[in-house]
Amino acid sequence: MKKVYVLMIALTVALSVSAQECVDLGLSVNWASCNLGAERPTDKGTLYYMGSGIEFIPGVINNDIKIVDHNKDFSGDPNLDPSTQYWGAMWRTPTSVEWEELINRCTWKYYNYVDDRGIEGKGYEVTGPNGNRILLPANYFARQNGTGLYQTSTPKYKSKKIDILLFSPKRVLVQPWKYNYMTVHVYGVGYRPVTDK
Image (cartoon, rainbow, N blue to C red; front, side, top):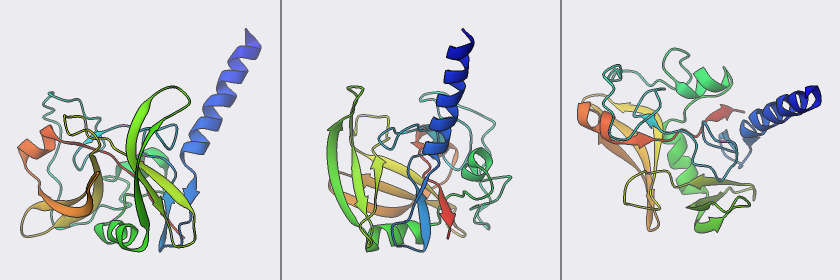
């Protein structure tokens, strides 16, 4: 029994380390190989209430969610940024400028796959200028299968919106979303952390 316990600890440590690997795509920041809450690059990871580190549960209204400060970008803020809170000080949520760089300087190829566990998935393979790649799994829970919603840390000050990376099989864009009680509780978003070079 002792050997099994030690093996489980070793596997847990190996999985947590591999989930936090950074990939140099030849851009201004390094991108995590997995989403926050994922064990593998093909896993969608944990969805969170928009702009928060609280796990998203479809159909559940969580009144503890606070509306973000529209005057402040929260990237790397240890009190506000889930990427920093869960993975440590070197990790942060990308800004909308960093997501735009990923869109504009990389090649995006939509994929369908079945992983080694037999789990089907969809998403984008993103190849950087240097040839290195990451996978961005579709993570939207509703009928729009194949859609991804990823958090940026960038608010739109006067319009009370926050930028979100949105993708479908036909398009990829950073789009401002009205950040209000309804959107916070209806849409779960994924986090793909970055780290500075």
